[in-house]
Image (cartoon, rainbow, N blue to C red; front, side, top):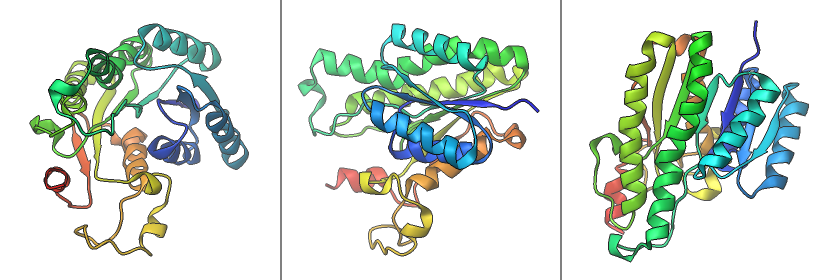
Amino acid sequence: MKIKTALITGGASGIGKMTAYQLAEKGYQVVINYRTSEAEAVLLTQSLSETFGTKNIAVQGDVANKEDCIRMVNQVLSEYGTVDVLVHNAGPYIHERKKMTEYAFEEWNYLLQGNLSAVFYLSKLLIPGMRQQKWGRIITLGFDRVETAPGWVYRSAFAAAKAGLASLTRTIAIEEAENGITANMVSPGDIINEWKEKKIEEAALSVNQNTVNRRQGTGEDIARVIAFLADEKSDFITGSIIPVTGGTDVLGKIHKI
């Protein structure tokens, strides 16, 4: 059987890193895209190779930049020939709380390009190869209830880009269904940074009174869903937006802060 290759954008840390371990464990060759975290990305590829015996590489590039996306894809295809699974994990985010009118033009454009246009760039470049082999998986990341295009106070650019991405993900699913390509979105709950690289078993030991099921969400929670969608037998799941929130009203919680 052909060994499949997965490209994970922003994969050097956090949810992307946990996803890399999940996919490598299932036998995927993993390409870790990074923008500035070269040391972390290289160390991760080495760890994956030593642990699972897979061939993995790190590729630098800013997904918000079209030329970087073209260069990255050319580099990956020259190394592996195909990309079978594309996980759009990278997504610029501004933590500072500010209203729409307070965003600089440059900030707004960068958030839209990094969270929405980047998916167009990479999908456009990689879908032709997926069509040839009649198989492919495209997985994007959103946020709680993104498919309803909700307002998100102080996060106007990020929310607008992700709402557009939800529509784009479903459009790709419809357009490419006949080619054996699925496209789905996973919407993480409020997973704080320190838990993005932790496992479920660690969370089970930590009680969180603010969540419905009384434990903290982890990067593994999200990575397991991504890996499931990438599976050969998940071909009947496409155009779906899957919330992984632990049942918590994430936006309601945020709006009350």
